Image 1 (cartoon, rainbow, N blue to C red):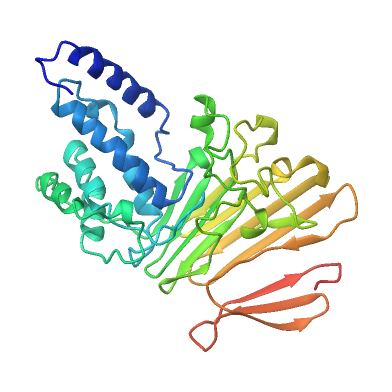
Image 2: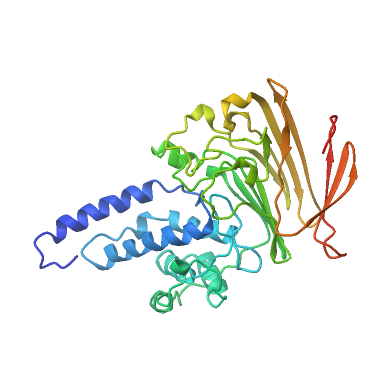
Length: 361
């Protein structure tokens, strides 16, 4: 395609280079990615190889203009569970992921990113059973060999907090846990301003939701890769069983007016402690009459997650508080105070308590 001898080689490479520049311009500088890590691997797997085709063929070298790739790898690292086997984030996610070590080796080789080199090392020999077959083909071993960044020293990702303001998403990491929370435009602020005004299908109605991976499992999980945008599958509130814009659809709408975006969450950090507050009312379907739905959440990793939801409705309605886990729930208590545990035994002490001025069932 890029042979100098072909009369249209320059035309083709110029067109493809223009497309590649356009794609790169739509990626946020902080590396935020709105969909699951399964799609990160799938989409960046194509883009990275196109950049290499352009560089090694008759086209331009766009790597010097694509420093955003460093932070794309940083986001992947931030969303990677402590065991390295899961991607803990939102947007049609398949949590069991892998096979993308070569992506980070290539990013490290072209940008000198030590964190990308470290992530490539972490992912290199992990098992890929249960991973989307498209992301772990046998040929990935060739890519790992071709792009191994021998000249780059690995830089370990540290425990603590990592924020991605473009999508108002934050990660809190310890040696055995990973917590994340987000709210904002489905694809993030930058892509919306660049003209991608919808949810690009794979986004979920998940503003204000949170996930927790702990002790090698999804202690607080979500829907996984299902072609349903149900708010009730997220860890957020529904009204009469319905919730945010896109609810009950196969894909998110192609156009979501800014007035219907949940605002970016107000996030504060102090060491490993994180506090986030956001009013989610604008992201709910208008007929539900949600006048205000303010969620506050406070996280002290390894100790507790405290949350408060203050809801004001135009009309009387059922308010449901949704929570999902790979473990089994057990309930105790009743009346205005309900307690839940996830799992069993002294090694799973997690409990959730609901307080309300109304009767809780």
